[in-house]
Amino acid sequence: MKKLILCIIFCTLYKQSFCWGFYAHQRINYFAVFLLPPEMMVLYKPNIQFISDHAVDPDKRRYAVATEAPKHYIDIDRYGRYPWTEVPEGFSDAVKKYSEDTVIANGIVPWWIVIMQQRLTNAFKEKNAAKILKLSAELGHYIADSHVPLHSNSNHDGQQTNQKGIHGFWESRVPELLAEKEFDFMIGKATYISDIPKYVWDRVRESGAASDTVLKDEAGLTKQFPADRKYSFEERSGKIVRQYSSAFTIAYNHMLNGMVERRMRVAIASVASFWYTAWVNAGQPDLKNLKKTAFTEEDMKEFETLNNAWRSDRIKGRQHE
Image (cartoon, rainbow, N blue to C red; front, side, top):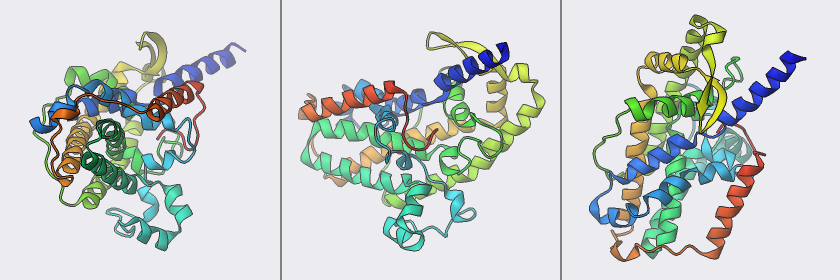
């Protein structure tokens, strides 16, 4: 009976620890702001807190909208082998080849990023500050997701290889433990992306190619660690929770040769470059007079709905994306 109770406690704490990966998303959007040119900084810097906080809105939406989940991933391994040239880069062509149901079931993040990019470009053309900030925050989330290896693999949480929890381990635990102390986010400036679909697919293919290493290295390290050292009770956000131990996390990061840091750095550069590209494609509108943000009543209601749905703890669609 005691073992059963302990198991239930462990599972509850584990769920609280690894559901979202909010930290990394917020940091990626935050640091991306500093890569922008001064002409964009006048709007983005005063609103950096909003852009960071709302980087996680797409994840919160997964608790409210069942169709949200596929926008965060693509199981690219279902389309053959690296470099996955079999899957058309155009959505309509992919649907024609595989059927819409199949494409959506396998995830649509590369195509969704292109749609969100166009929406942000339109918001710049409209000189609508609220739309620009809201879309920038959310676009940053989807771009960051495309840089996560397990967002490009059908074995997205190690469920096929008895590695349940590895998704949150890579995406949340490693950066939360090490980013502030060891990761270097001093990057160059945002650059113009001339071919957005190609750029997105290049990043997705990089993620897919790295996913095998993410899984293989964790499995190899687990064999070296006694079970009582792989996990530990530690403080997280003011609570004592069961999570991957600091020793195991540090060893895993070393075994990956800094992969998490590298993917975060590329994600930061990508997010800033997508924002910059949208602004350029909109004609580089003057953003000086857009400092004051006026969100609509509909916007405010959506923010409240997302927060309430997230607190309900009932995710819709696929887990761990």
